[in-house]
Length: 535
Ligand code: NOJ
Image (cartoon, rainbow, N blue to C red):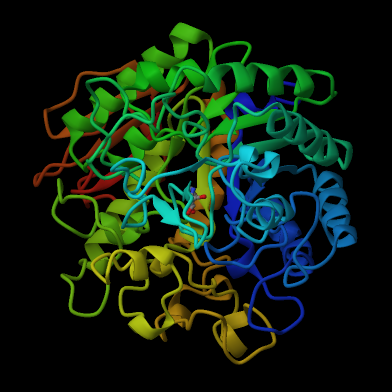
């Protein structure tokens, strides 16, 4: 859709700058590295890229601790490099979405440094959430483990729902609101096409800071019923996004806001994408659904219904930088509980089964109407690095949980481009910031391009067929199938996934367009396989 509503059916590819491509050979990815590889993303067939944060940051949470919202960390390049990246992407017909982190700053941000220096009772402290007391003001827990409050030598406490280096901003303060409106304009003026809004459900806290002793889990684990916890999904957040939307609407070309909001059920999530708020929200209930047909059908139906009710497009996602990659997640028995990382000594996924199901899951997802998000490396079938030695772990959750949660490093390992190059083509350095496992060679892009049946070619064909058959803007109609399969029609394409132990039949007269694995000799669909067909 080449209009201002480009995002409604777009396939958006997440780039994790630390791990995508290293241009300068320091072992960490950077913006020039990304720019040089953009033509390959065009070749893959995506419509847009979303970049995780590249702002100046002490990197205590891999850049989600922002010290300056208007700059580029020297590790990643310069503002000029950001401009080049945006320009190159646009020349290639790719949109660019950047990450915005408004819930908290880094403790290295000048506002927080000023707050520490100015002391209790100062106006500088009003921009954050400071409280007095002999004890922590309430029982809130940090998402990464431990108390969400930190006491300073002067006796005051400050709130940090994430790492201690990520103090929460006070969004009731007019200066905070004004500052972010200005930051939006700063990047819109540079030409970005949108913002992925980090922890979009967290900005406003319940006014009384009511006690809540359950963990402040966001990355999964929210109960789909009951009132929201006092730190999440408070009514006041919506007013902020209405204001932001008004700013975006002043710009041409369809600039968008995407909510990262771990909110359930889907009707509550859909409130973030009402016509005068954001454009899209990540569909985490879909990401978290087990590999079971009834559960998947239920979440597809409830997602479409909730978004239709507010006139929004539904999004779909299977992997990102916060969860175990789906090629590994699906290698555990269906219904396995969410894993906060996998390490040596933990139960290991069945990699063959995981990849088989991942390919089927992707083909199912890309057959759905709406917009889909891909995470770098999934087009290579990349698994989680489940053998990463613990001494390399950088995720703050590892330390803060007292080494009970391995955290997210396993899905953030630099991706392999060339099997026989240093760091598998990630960059000129021999070693990357997180070590890549030797199996990365088999997954390298140059081992997959033009190789029939490779995961890369499956993604490329699926994206081309999705575009040709306009599946993103289609409509889903369920078809009768046996209980171990899911079958639906989207425009002229029939999508069938077989979850059962027995092969499933294709509709009569179907001509197969794509199949996540070869079909059986008799033409039926084997276990854990998705087929696209025209009937
Ligand atoms: C969500 C981001 O995706 C995650 O990586 C980060 O740790 C938290 N928000 C805190 O900013």
